[in-house]
Image (cartoon, rainbow, N blue to C red; front, side, top):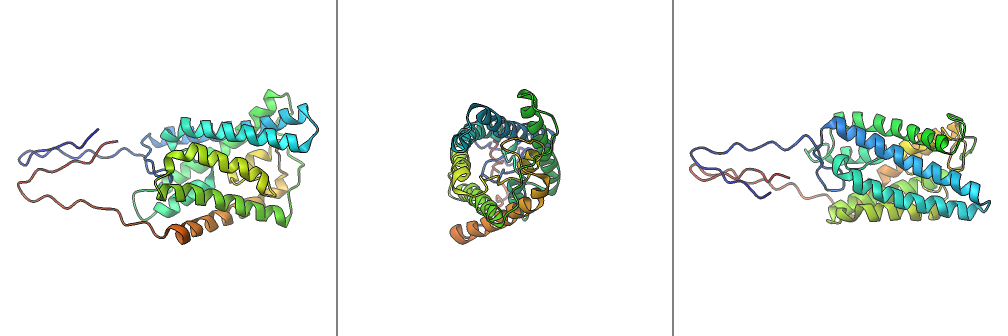
Length: 274
């Protein structure tokens, strides 16, 4: 919808933008916070169900670890791309506390990023969705529910892999927004995660909520509860490194342009509505 033109004598009141915020990828989301939180829970649940379910299916079809990883990574690429396309317009399709925190941190001094209230709603929704997705995948394949993973992932090289994977993800998302390429997010983000399955030692969890959810399944994609804390710490460090890389590569964002106040007697333009 184009700009609306008011009159000098009876200026049309500017309509307030909806409650939504910029999602970190450069797009404004306008759904009420409750619906956005539900979208984050559903999206994260579906993502974990894809990762865990594909892992279970792969291990039942082949004993080749390389083929298992290939099947899981391909399913994740396709599933994540679809979920971003479907739910991005509602919540921004974070599905990841590291992304949510990075979006809040970069937009905390302006109205562009999520507020602390948004963060407080998004992160619990993402974690709850991740746990539900793991349980759903186990239920679909007849596995025991809430069986803690015994897949220990405690090693320094795996933590380094998580730092690299998460830093690259943050650099991609926020760098794309800075260069006007955010519209390619469904392809670029999904492709990056698929590649990071293979080029990182940790197989690229790169997501604290997904990491927690995967502790609830003792299957191919699981992670032992004792491995959670260092993995999540590495992911948060990676998010900070990623934001530093965005600043180093792209510089500081330009200050927002503000329209000059209209002179008395001149028509006033109301904001462009989404």
